[in-house]
Length: 213
Image (cartoon, rainbow, N blue to C red; front, side, top):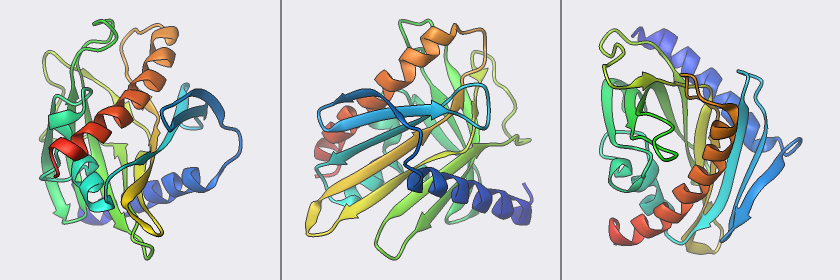
């Protein structure tokens, strides 16, 4: 993948995800509990929804980041029930890569295994926050594979934010707008994402204690 074009695209996607973080308008709550909220609004990228999750994880930001980072060495496939495998297809810089993520069957196998090929950018901010942003790309080293439906991530990502005065807590804000492809009823998709995102936070809370302590 051309490094200059990849850098240009990834920066544009990162800026878009940062705008999602800053824009508090139009969100509708769809799930709330155990300190985690999941809300949605119509996506401007595809005929689906943009989902936002937010919650406090009881661990230092570096431990949370080790579990969620979409880079080599991530622990994501060890705890996230929606990730069966993760691999780096091409490293462009230490903060920019193309990855492939595979997911197992979900929703009582109504959703068959998917895989996603994304251009991923990691950024660090002056306040100590870390972010990742991702968007679907095509890559010659990763054509569609038998047994997987190729899904498409529109601009998505997460923000791992330290809490002033509370070094053992992290505010984690996540954004998903994913086209799962295939012939799935809209009701299945709309019920899957809020439940999946709530489970993501619950499983992450356990993972930082078992994998990072």
